[in-house]
Image 1 (cartoon, rainbow, N blue to C red):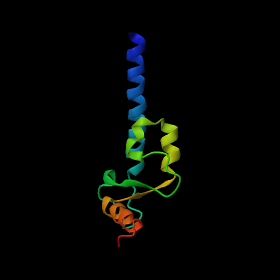
Image 2 (image 1 turned 120 degrees about the vertical axis):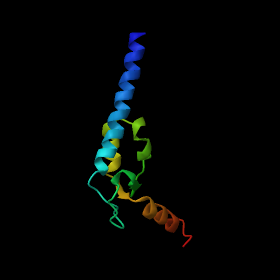
Image 3 (image 1 turned 90 degrees about the vertical axis):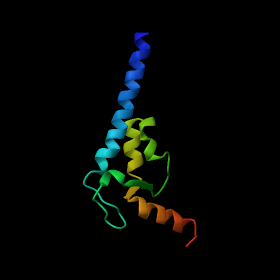
Image 4 (image 1 turned 135 degrees about the vertical axis):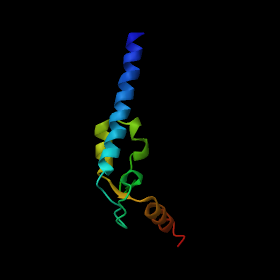
Length: 92
């Protein structure tokens, strides 16, 4: 039973490291489109190429994978992110 609880704790630590990395990464950053920076914690990762997984679920992936995935992204505020996807769909 100790082995099982050790595995659960290891997974919790792994998830926490990945999630903490993305939150720390956003600090002192701003939206790549409009420059919004008042609350960097709400900035969203937008993939520019080769999306392997959604950064919002980074806790499901090892930290090194998360770091590689973040390099494929720009940070956008929610408004700019929504507007970009709206334009990409060709609805404007």
